[in-house]
Image 1 (tube, one colour):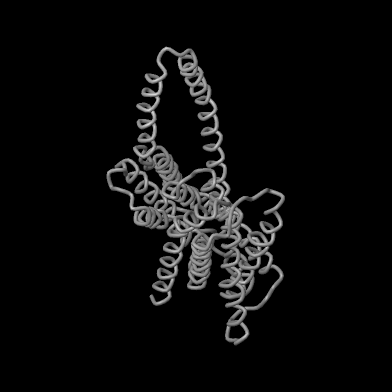
Image 2 (image 1 turned 135 degrees about the vertical axis):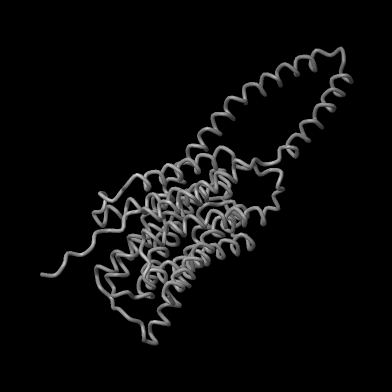
Length: 366
């Protein structure tokens, strides 16, 4: 019972940390006007929390397990998947996505990927029964509902300047009455405005596809994270700190060294703004604590097909509440259909949890 409660506490830690990750990272990206710089801050936070601190604790001894090449490889792959998932989230936010619907979509699809990947690794596809498939349909339906009925920004602020320009243009036209220049300028301006509309629509469509692609990267990467990490931890004798160190090392390589080399070639025009750096470091810190919570849940006897769907089912709810609180979003901007979509995603994740593959029992000893 004590071990089960410990697993629940570790799952709650991961769900909370990963739930607040998206909104906190969004503030950092907006402040620095960059995709690479917040990503680097996330990697730096991971390096401190997931490499330096565990190495200091490991030096004191008392940690079970040991270093194995198989365990290191699987744990590094888990860290790579986590870093690519973080990059996908940053890209989705950079292309104009909002955390209030980006994160629920990621967390809605990740348990599906997690369960299918776990079934593939355990050769348990024969256990994919009708209730499990119904859970997948619920998750997909809820994710689509979240995307369609996401809270829309208030357009009144954008309409005010347009309304202010119209009287000024009318007065200018009246003052210049009788002149050919003002009469000719109006049709030209109207033609320019009309010509700009198709380009704007095309740009929005392009960014929407980029947002979906980035969400897919995060969804598949974080969906594979749990099963791969569990394999690495098991290969290192159930160690807690050693897999975490490998995760931090992978984050440092992918999220710090690589973006640092790409800042100049990609022409990044962002700035190292103090507030943005602080928010991004905070996002990396909660992400690393979430990784630690996952490892602790596995160490308490949890399995990927139980731990990860619960995490991904609770995280979007926490994400939504955090986003609404930080952005001071009025409740009138939230559609009941959006809330219903969140509930359907959570119900689908719970169904996947209850009826997901459990793996095959070991063969009896002869």
